[in-house]
Length: 327
Image 1 (spheres, rainbow, N blue to C red):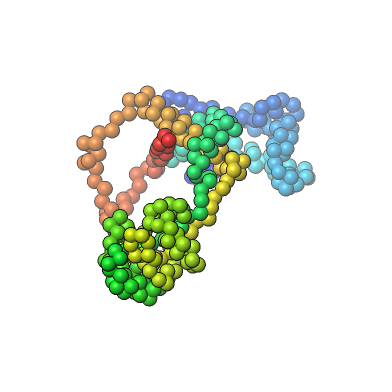
Image 2 (image 1 turned 45 degrees about the horizontal axis):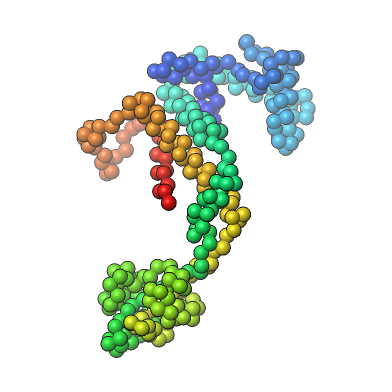
């Protein structure tokens, strides 16, 4: 069954195993059931008021296709054809078809989540936005950052440092793997040696405090990502072979500039919180349990051939995002 047809026909199915019947009767828009009848079939009818409403709901481009009497008749017949086919499907018992029932459950789950997560989620207030901005100001206001890789030597090993510098300068600018290999083999800085000499992103103040202002000055002189400082950088404690990995521009977003993204972030967090609460309640009400012992006996062979499907694929809903850590 095609998804669109399934979506529309399923509105009146009887859910397997629940005993809950859903009315298949045609439901016109509210307030349009009375008045002159444009078409009738069985116990159903399409009124002029309903058609007025249907056409008013269309965009002007679609509405332009129904200017003649014949065009409006085609539209009415299309509505009737669908209802007649749906009624025939019910008479044939297709509302109990496993594919139909599974598709109906998917549509109902989507509508349930829409009601619970969208329609019931309150708007984010300006005070909430400000509170978040103040608590996470470092995400919106931060200095320019530089990412360097270095190979450090004690001053007693200047000759070795000069030799490694020559090797580093001979590498292709973007060959970070080869520079990292030099760092692992020669660097005397244990905190970065295992990281291929990577210092991560640091502000000028952080870089100066960590290794010395000389490194900050050297970084400023490097013009292109991949450049290696032409000479050893000497600080109070060591000699450094320095390579530029990247730069980040300074960020200075005001509360007003960050407001839209913060509102969306808080809205998503609120929706996820409602989602987690809903699922926990449903699990508790249903006394949901999982047997790890039984699950351990399930065989999943990635090399086995695909088996023939026995019925429709079951619906699947991903887990909600974990709650954000509190700051």
